[in-house]
Length: 121
Image 1 (cartoon, helix red, strand yellow):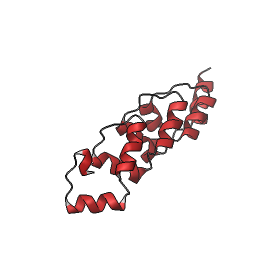
Image 2: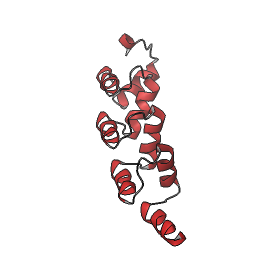
Image 3: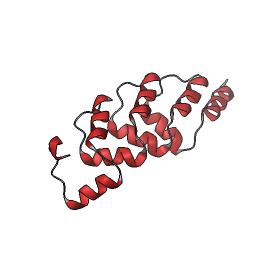
Image 4: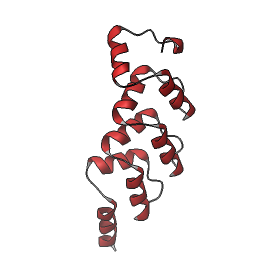
């Protein structure tokens, strides 16, 4: 991490070791389109399970410009690729990430939204 310009305290070094924030992980995130992430953000990614594979799956669903903060929020609130596919299957394409997060926070699933839409007709 020093090679990446990070001068770590002993506590930061221990935290990095606990969460396996390694130069290799930083490189993987850089290759996934998130270069120059600070160690704190890399720790967040590890804690919440933001992986290169997760990022790749989100991109395959058409979300190419997701911020690091949004990725963490998605993982915290359970916005998974499967959830996004279920929203799309209900007829809602390219729902903004922030709306997907809100749906999970307020326990709104695609079936509920579809039922409300049907009730309007």
